[in-house]
Length: 489
Ligand SMILES: Cc1cc2nc3c(=O)[nH]c(=O)nc-3n(C[C@H](O)[C@H](O)[C@H](O)COP(=O)(O)OP(=O)(O)OC[C@H]3O[C@@H](n4cnc5c(N)ncnc54)[C@H](O)[C@@H]3O)c2cc1C
Image 1 (cartoon, rainbow, N blue to C red):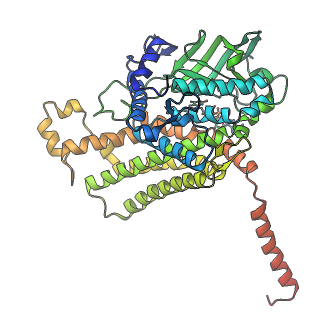
Image 2 (cartoon, helix red, strand yellow):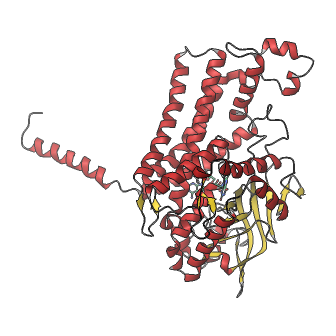
Image 3 (cartoon, rainbow, N blue to C red):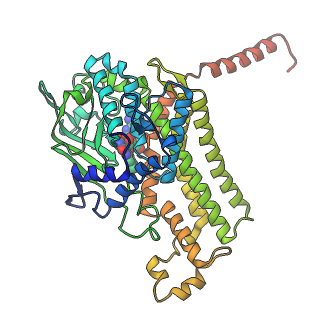
């Protein structure tokens, strides 16, 4: 089939309805359901974008020669890796970084796992073959994934096996010649409006028999019998793009995933009951690095959007001469340049990994993924500080077209924009900084790549600081030696 168009995405979702619940009722068709349909439309648009700029967005399939999505590439050279980066930035720009789980995020994960398939083969040669076949299947059909990693937030003081019910967290219930049966739940999957789900290792498990049933990686269609998605309340209230410029377009949706005796055939299993392999897999295959590469491209797009938004607001209401406005704008600009630098260094310093995959440098990407959860909430605070009451003193389209239209034109004007220009700008600022869509984005960025506290702990343990300790040791030694030699105090 090769790279899809938007219409193909919508058609497939209609032909393969998943069991998805929203506000107490089962959604029959996510492509038409209020609260979902606009997110599906934005997702589909990404697939049309790839055909608008095929040279940038697509490449020739290594097996069929057909055009396929570039985010499925397993890069062998820096130029190939950078071409993936340019493609991901183009997709991120389409949603101004507001669709964090755009399909390229998990396309990069699956591509890296396939590139590092030998790691999975070490456990069982079938698993390496399975991931290679699955990657080719996803690439040739241009399918879109959601994923779920985390166990339900019931009792975090103990692992999944020690919860009140051993089947609270999704675990293996049965094993047959044909596959495994999974029962239980996983905490969250963003973009359930997709074709397939990656159910990959959860947060670190203990190497015990007790935890082994929770150690697995597989991928299955969202429409698999027994698989249920329970969604949070949609932040797309079904309003127009004027009133809810972001929420009415980029609602990805988040859902808890229930596995009600879900059958997974062996050919879709990539890791099984091997706690150590599960704990290592993201790092060992390089998947975390390629995913972080997508994330930094998304962060650049998002920060560019914030810089543009804030600059238009400043201009609109004539506050450009105040010093704290310069400082706040500079802060966003510095954040943008920081993210751009992280991406650039990660690409320029990329190296072939042990599986021959060109892999971005990890250190700058690890820094980026630890930093952005702090930068984003602060930038949203800046939008609030700059917009002030302008973020709430905003009429809707119905007001603009209603009986008070003339008054609105007069009282909502600003220094450089008339009311009809100013209102949509400040509604966009409201949907960026204040609405339900906005606050979900802040929470998302805080936890985008995991718990920032535990990510910092991982950073503490995984990055060697000996070189810097040696520098300080050498300086101390020099001081001691010189003091001992009798230098004057
Ligand atoms: C909007 C949104 C979208 C998401 N999308 C996805 C998705 O698509 N797929 C997916 O798999 N996940 C997704 N997640 C989940 C995300 O990976 C988790 O939020 C993140 O890993 C943190 O886990 P938790 O939410 O279970 O928090 P918890 O682990 O429940 O943490 C709660 C609090 O306790 C503290 N805490 C808990 N345990 C420890 C510990 N051992 N050491 C120190 N502190 C601890 C945390 O620091 C935190 O303050 C999403 C989350 C959000 C908010």
